Length: 78
Image (cartoon, rainbow, N blue to C red; front, side, top):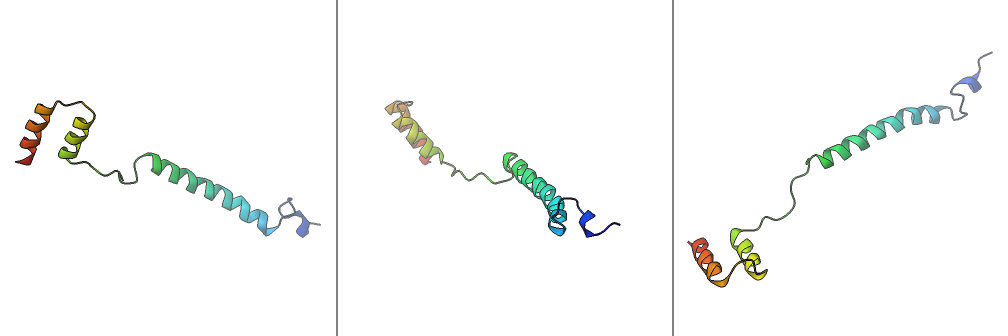
């Protein structure tokens, strides 16, 4: 009365059972990786600039006058 054809009902047999378990597991793995990626799980890969490099960039952008630049550069050299 209940033969092999009544197993999963999808006609996929064992492959159907594998998919029933594999799809939710992959979904959980994907969600965990996405959450960790957004929450800062990875270290900051940007190189940090030294104070002298920041001062040089500010002078190049015109944010700092020449006199102030030379004074601060002298302060940072000590």
